[in-house]
Image 1 (cartoon, rainbow, N blue to C red):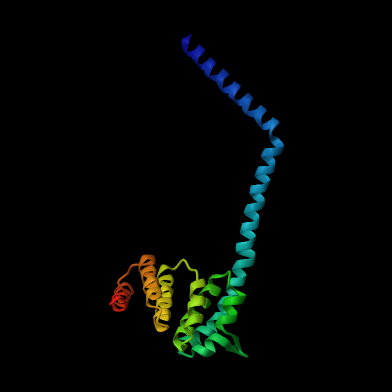
Image 2 (image 1 turned 90 degrees about the vertical axis):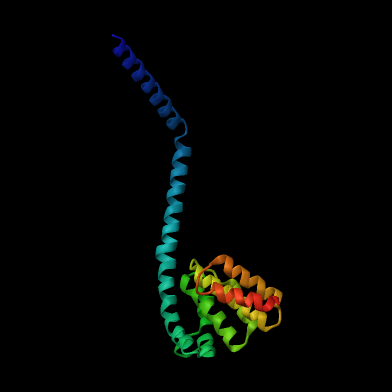
Amino acid sequence: MKKTNSTEKQLANLEEGLSKTEQFIEDNSKILFSIIGGLILVFIAYYGYNNLYKGPLNKKAQKHLFIAEQYFEKDSFQTALEGNNKFDGLISISEQYSNTQSGQLAKYYAGISYLNIGEYENAIKILDEYKSDDLLLLSIAQIAIGDAFAQINQTSEAIDYYQKAIQIETNLLTTPITLMKCLNYMS
């Protein structure tokens, strides 16, 4: 008899809880549906932007970047930067596609190109705008900014960027060289 009483109490409590929930949903149905609809719209907008706009735009940028990379690899930095009548240069690609991964990679290549042709202020400017999830490349970009500052005799700024590079990514490839550069400019 106690078991059935206990079970009946649990069922009554459960039924009461469901009644309260149903009442809450009825009282706030417009608000709840508005919130759910808003979340669905945000998801659709995010998905659409990334997959229907940004994805194809990045692929287009990759195609343009491919030829400029070949000139970069051949140390034809000026041609890689400016392009010619056959392809867009790194500057154009980085401006047109700045919100894509390939556009950001074009900024990296453009900054390194400027550094190699001695346009240090341009190298600093464009590399400072470079963003990436690739910590190694981001670290190398900071080292390149440091090198550009060193070339224009702003050693304290150079050291600051070398230290930033080490903080971003510590590894066996770049960290020892960067530490040597810091020590070189500190003495």
